[in-house]
Length: 431
Image (cartoon, rainbow, N blue to C red; front, top):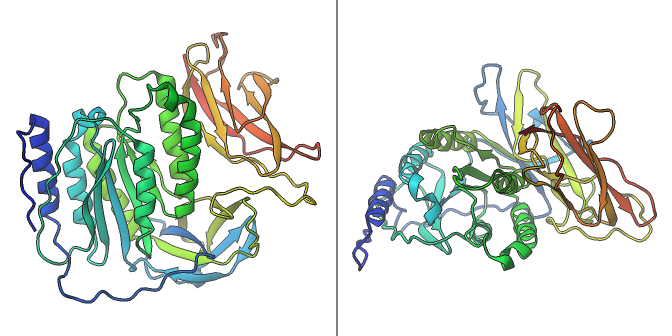
């Protein structure tokens, strides 16, 4: 099917986008017409899923493994694997491109990235493509590489960005299909509403809502992060930290191209990883839907293999924490979100440090401790009611070591006792 033209004189950048998307999709064959679709089996929603890639000593992915080759632990307890989809099972990938005004200068590299990804697809895999600015436009519905060619035209509109809305749309789109699935988002993460006072006051609430939706989808979200020229370092850290939080809790990753030319290579690498992954599903030994965070660890029973798993854990009840029973006084360790491990933060006398973590069910308050690498006493120790804390310290860090800072958090329960500390997460500082 050919879709032609825009009924207005295109801007120079608009013409580029028309040519770009046409070139991307001319290479992608259309769906089979007039053929019955094969039936599929859908894993029960009570099962917990995790994707795993197995590597040998040479770093090559290993096919033809069975569930007997894996051991799954949830909070340290062995789990029985109910279902395993091999590397040969189809993978469904949604490509989501940020085409807002803030990405114009880097948009031409999306062409090569998309082509490299499509060229890496296997015959059984499916792909869908969409773009977003203030709204989402679906360019291509789910299809394989089989069938006739199709040309799609993208009318470029130099508008702002609603990143959170686009991610929620992606979650709904994934709900329409079964089987293995994931999303790759090319974006700078900048939301056009950032300058609005109303958005700033609601940003944390919006991010928490999207984070829970992405977590509930149980599908990996990969972000290829474009540069953010002209923004303060503190704002860049915050935007990057939110992308890292979304990726971590979905089982995906944030990839930072060293140069703009590296984008295509990153897309090709993601395609290879998705194609080489095993999807494991198990029924938890602890089925209570109490909103707690459950840690997942997948091990290989073969000593010669190294595993890479898509996510560290999940929230029972789909990321919707609930209050524990009145008889329970156990308070869990908080799960840290931002800044990510080994983040680089500017000195707090120049820009704020923003720390965030997941709410703990039953917590009445939190304690955060920040430690400098060259001192036996904490740099900061404070309590807060919410699951975030902002450091705006006007004193300079001159003379202090800038590498090896750490932070951790613990929650306080209604019974008056403190729960266990979270992980100790490192970060570095630059002046």
